[in-house]
Image (cartoon, rainbow, N blue to C red):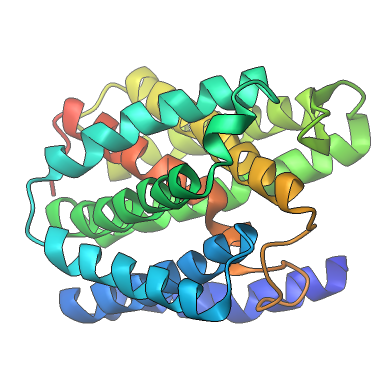
Length: 265
């Protein structure tokens, strides 16, 4: 499994890096939109919807993406921040609230709140700041995931959320925190020179913690659906949702923090 994961990552990471750095804005929006559309298909699959309903859900999401393409950032990011605060409450209180978030109409709406703001945030970050900020966000999410995986395997004892994702531990989270804070402090002078190092590192830490909520939130739906992975498109990794669950939560939070810090290109 680890070999498959590494091989898939070795193939995908160069494509992602080249896409972030080289694609014109419109094509970048389309490329990320395709990923989001595939994730929407998988989300509808977690709801046990039929293929026609899943297709209709994807079409509806794509229509929303077109509709919000030129919308003010605040209109998209603010509801996302409130949504992830609610998601955190559901994760912490699991299974309390299950009758609400698992209801088909609510779950469908939550899927839109998970996917649409993350698409908007990535596009805005690339346009308003620099493609390297997008790459930094992606890389520190990857770094955090890897550090959590290896720290958890080596030292993991205390379960993080045993009823949602039994394999995750607090020791894994601590490993991710150390790795991400060091990484943030290392790149801050180059990537965000006008932001105080401790504030940039704090933003990255907050973003990391929210990304953990994103991972666990999606795991709630997988557990409710009785599946291990959201799909099988990526060998060794599962589905698209399995790879971007952390990012969907992290992107709007990171963008909001950057804007508060006055970060611009």
